[in-house]
Image 1 (tube, rainbow, N blue to C red):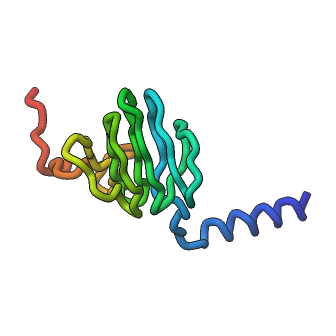
Image 2: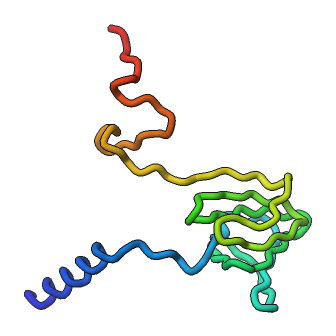
Amino acid sequence: MQVFLAGLLLVLGGALAAPAQEVPYSAVVMDLTGKAAVTRHGESRPLETGTVLFPGDLVETAADAFLTVYYPQSGEEEKWPGGLKFTVGKLQSDHRRPEVKCRNLKVVLPSMEAPPGGMKIRGAPSPKEAPQPSR
């Protein structure tokens, strides 16, 4: 039992002390309606929800498809309509077209000003500045 606990502490301690590492992929397919394909190193295969995409991958959507791609390092979410092609970049797709709807979903970590268990929303007044309800 002591050996198990010592091993567990060693593993957890190493994981907690390890610096954050970059993920080897750029994006993840979050939603897909219809058909789409990815070409990587000259080999094409169908896309599915959950597929990871790498820089340089070429994605092509069928005319009736709709694809949502999320870039975790930048927080960019892109919604691609059908009939378009794009190349996956490191932080966003290369050559985004006007038809593509984009928004940034980067999460702001809890701050000391946030209530316990809550998050401070960017641009929101601090608790000291927030209007208090009248009684």
